[in-house]
Amino acid sequence: MPITKGFRQLVDEANAQITTYSVAQVRERLHDPKAQIVDIRDVRELEREGTVPGALLAPRGMLEFWVDPASPYYKPVFGDEGKEFILFCGAGWRSALAAKALKDMGMTNVAHIDGGFAEWVKQAAPTETLEAHKLAHAARRAPKV
Image (cartoon, rainbow, N blue to C red; front, side):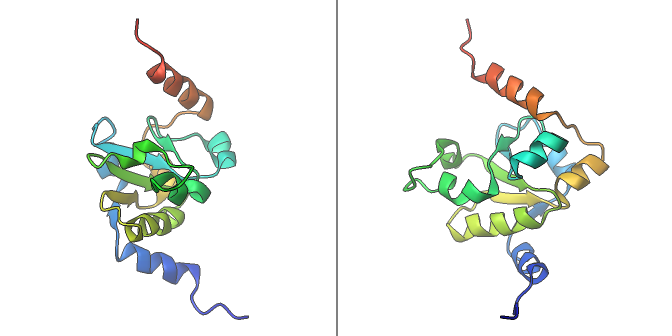
């Protein structure tokens, strides 16, 4: 069966309908409590390449389930309407499709990073290893004494 619409066309169509930010725009918002960066890459990519400090790790395959309050996999963090969820993947293709899917689900507070993690690294934006990310996340969740 021939493919009638390739991935490039799907990504182009998604990009025409979603908000896209440059690395520089997102970098300025790294510490903005109203911006939540979301890494949708596979765990193997995270282990190999690291991630963005403070990013929420939400695998692409679970994203719609984590966002939907009716899902048994729902993550309440996605219910915070005061945040803008800025997705990224490796090159900006999966995150464009994912942002479009979330927009189709009714989310208005979703965007993605043009060029993804590859562009983030190319522009020398801050990164951390997955292990450092896990330690930082654990420290943020630890009770304050």
